[in-house]
Image 1: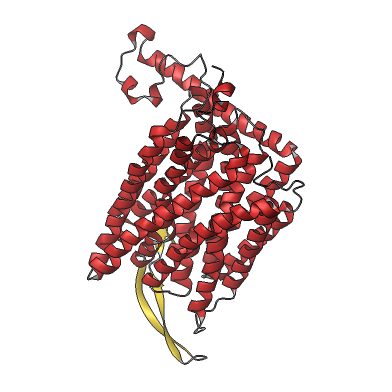
Image 2: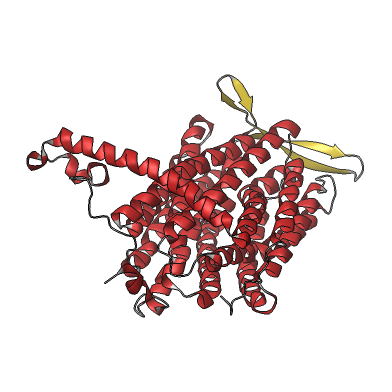
Length: 494
């Protein structure tokens, strides 16, 4: 059966079981976003990189405040702020993803095993989360940063393939709701695990050392959750990809069992390896050629050009703030660990509501207007963060207000971006993996730029307020560009 026909059969498109299995991967992998990216690991990293706390007297308020004194991290003889190093480590992880994504997407389409690549990155991320349990202090801080990088590569690498399934399994009129459903599953699942982790760290732990131990156990639970619940997705999600008839004699590097074969009937091991090297060189060359070709094709379409340009700029701000928000709360206002985690937990719950509200709102006013509203609220959050002053006695409540804004728009803007792009693509296209690879590469380039600027601002000004202010500029450019989108893409119209 031709691939196009297979994609249009009722068994694949809009199949409830397949759509549920797809969205359930958000339940599995979103624990990484909340536990590792947003809450427990950044706080743990901040604690382990803090040497002591000093008290300072604020003359304006007549109060004493605690200010953390951080360990500096030395690299090649130069000392860096630990928060800046964390930001640079994220930059490295996304640079790796950007370089790998086009190659792996091309391989997936060539060999016809898109789901297998999704599994590989899932397992890389899950085992890396478990590896973070070995990070115990400044003596092995680079080990912690290494597993943080590989976990990030696993998470974001898997999303390249995960997102590309959306137009394969759902018609356009259902993609907004399905995209939002995935985010809702993810937010609920991640909140459940964080609550479990909080019980371990805040309730069962009686001493600071026990709290650190239970924190490391939380990293193990995160990896196990991601690995375990993803099995439901892998069981029901079909494979997609065009399998080429002419492949190397044995794909040595993609099947470890082949490495130990003699390959006598195929000219010997070295002949097969040579054939493989030639194959992979062609794939790498073709993948980047295809990426530029796809980029040229997408930007030739007026609506896609303005959407993708806007998406790049507002992603610089959105993703960077999402990645650095916890360190901001810990470093800038020294918010207590339990209050910080509770705040971020409430943000996740609020994001569920936000994703559903924005999905419903898109029916009435269109995706373009919904995205515009979300960007405006992000700008308000950035400007408010810049004016935060830790010497203000009400700074804690101001931080809560900013968190409330971010929680409302975080899930909504992510869900609307993914579904809007999906509906702007040619319908029933066989290049969905490549299209979404370009989308993900563009997003990762935005994060590379954003995290680099954010970390550099920390090094320059020794605080994150100017970093937050710089992000508002990117949101503003994204807002201007999205308004050039000519059609109002709504849920009920294709």
